[in-house]
Image (cartoon, rainbow, N blue to C red; front, side):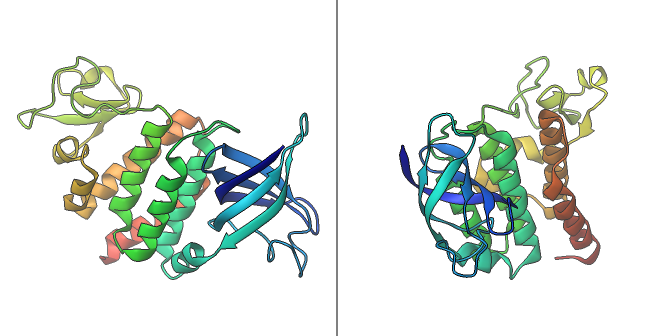
Length: 252
């Protein structure tokens, strides 16, 4: 079976001296692993080793019962990866995003709309310096795509609707959302959350109105929650958070 689709490389590892195993997020078929034979040769049919963040049209030969599909054609476009290398913060955010996509999706499980969501997010990183609000917005959208709907509009425990009159506001990963002061004692993992966050988080455009220190707090909370859901750490998260801490010390 030949698979023809648009795809972006979200992971690549060396298979041999001349070949790679590449993980693609495709537009129609979801995540697919394929062997790219000869991709590391100087005159490779793919234009050289396949790098994460390159994207374009591909053709994959998918044989029944084969452990790996075989990449037969890939026409990579490089403007995203080249644009991101000019800004370390944007590049680290992009690497975190593709790791999240890889970890939260299953092989051959279609996620309609996820491919354009990822590509549009990466293009936004190239075109704007608003890295943090774009990343938070992408992470929230990704969680919705994979069926993890965080509770922001009411207490995730007692379901009391959120209002700005709450005397305290917390986030609990185990509760999967916001917790009120009356319930916070039952959740040892609770973290203090600024009241502005639940009010504006449902509208991605409003994320840009959140002060950067609060947005950084929210990003740390989201990374902690996603790590808990996955049951293991995220390789790219440490590098991104390190850059975030440096930015906080030295200013934008």
